[in-house]
Length: 218
Image (cartoon, rainbow, N blue to C red; front, top):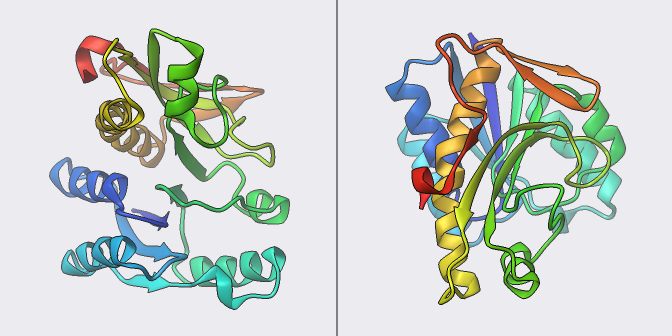
């Protein structure tokens, strides 16, 4: 049985998708904790959702720490108390230091709202619209010290429409995230993923796709 810890900063919609899929699909795993670096209303709703499902929910505010390293060390201690096999970033809006990333190397997943390597960093939807791309999407990847550059597990592409604004495009991408993130987490806890260099190999039987096209998530 794999222990999963989820980190978030906001509404936690990907956390909810993962918690629901874990229960519905009977993964060989359990979400043992949800940790947020913020105590605002959106994060509070997400933590209440976790508690309602019997999952310990913790707030560890970064503003209470004098430095990024001090916060990372406190966060690692909090996470390690739950003995995680997998750490999942679900809208966790902090850049994590190299020591933190190394501590969880090979068992730290993130989802990014673009088709990496395009549009790493922030404001991905605005940048995609400004660039005039016709496909946008989401990427699940292993986290490395270089921001948004880790080995890719799964991607989903959605159409960029002529009448899109950042909010409409973001909603379409978020729907895609809810499809691929639980899938990628399940593959990890089932022991189906391995990293070879910069690539993720997935042993999927019966076959499942590591990518989704627009028609599946539009």
